[in-house]
Image 1 (cartoon, rainbow, N blue to C red):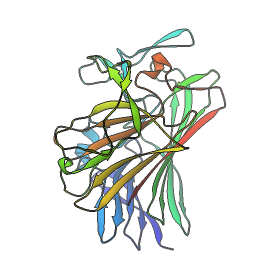
Image 2: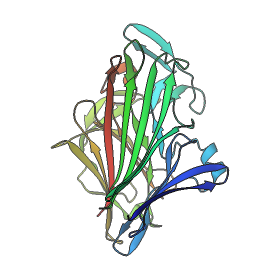
Image 3: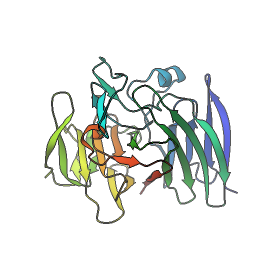
Length: 315
């Protein structure tokens, strides 16, 4: 078979590698550090592109506060002052954002995930990880969260998550993935972006939503001197929406496909960091602060689950 899965050390961290031997495509996962994907390499023609930007050292990964490639559950982005109301009750989350003002990016990041399964088939290989949330501060619910990473023979990488309410009462749930994307060593200034949206979310000075407004930028848009730190409402003509990063110089396009529809990834965050060497493209199942507004929020009844998929490829 062309696929193999093996583990190796990255400093004190143990990582698992899904490797496709004919193309050298690979996905590197660290279960003990929030189940993150540390590296994703995909081939286009003669070039093997490393498309994920993460801190280059084990210590850097552990200390990272920028959430590179992290899984954000049961909420993503900010909840102002960590306070929310759900079904008539008030809750207080730990205020973990830099500066201590808000709760940010959920409760599973940096935690030790369980390795559930490794599977190798003729046309794909996958690893499934899971973490159980059990009544932490401010979120008194029991939710089993799992993620399966799959590398396919046709070059696709797929992240599929599932969350199941194992408790006795309904619970709110939102998921987002926080990757920073790059295309070789080329600067962001040379790329174009194609954002599948006609409407963006407006924020106040605390980056909390206060409404929406039309997004009328012609697509694809050259990123030269353009800065994004926006949440978009996704427009899909079918069951998926696709965001593209395009490098004309390298003749390569990174396509990030998010599943859309009821309960799926109907929101999208795009952020261009100051270093201009990568772009964060984050598929979200709900709007920022959905625990308070309910915009896109999944409410899981006891015993019920929700899932969704994000697929990445080069063309």
